[in-house]
Image 1: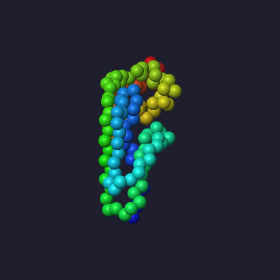
Image 2 (image 1 turned 45 degrees about the horizontal axis):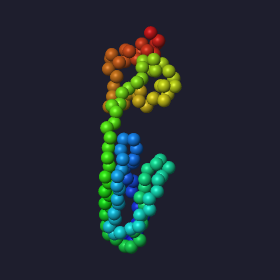
Image 3 (image 1 turned 135 degrees about the vertical axis):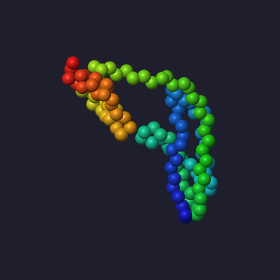
Image 4 (image 1 turned 60 degrees about the vertical axis):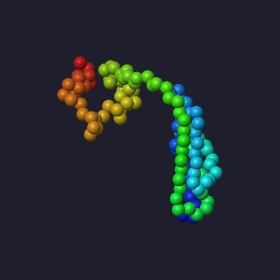
Length: 117
């Protein structure tokens, strides 16, 4: 190809669960790399290769220290299922999918909750 313009979103994020100590990106053929943060907070490395090339190698190295994450626990109650705001905010999680089904016991409890008994 005669030239290419590229973006890489490979940089780990630093947050309360991990700390990025170093991050490096190298390209072959060599290119000047510009880094910016997009609207979603993702670090983006952008570069253009202006000379003709038949391959592009992008190598990324990062050193990241991670911290244990607390175990996630569900805090919803049966009463929450009667709250339209809760149901509306969690609609996609409350729908059956081809990977999940509600067994007879769960369906019976759900019907009782919806009936208010």
